[in-house]
Length: 98
Image 1 (spheres, helix red, strand yellow):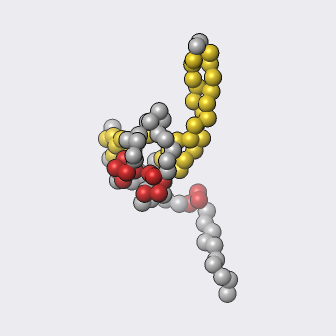
Image 2 (tube, rainbow, N blue to C red):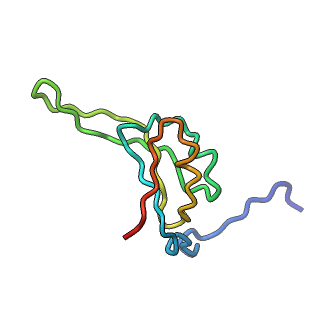
């Protein structure tokens, strides 16, 4: 018998569970500090920290900056609001889906 077996699955066959939510978390890219608190507390593990390339204009010069921010996978997010409640920077707000 194999020790610590790994369960393998086809990620394309996973049912999307976020279709029924009525609230959706929105991340403010300017406020997000990429602390990872939302990632730790998300009960569905739908948030990850990703690198975001934002364009800056300073002194009439266009520059880009790489910044980490929280990104939500809306296919699986159920809209519970835990991420917004635990975010220390208040960078996540819950909005009603129209």
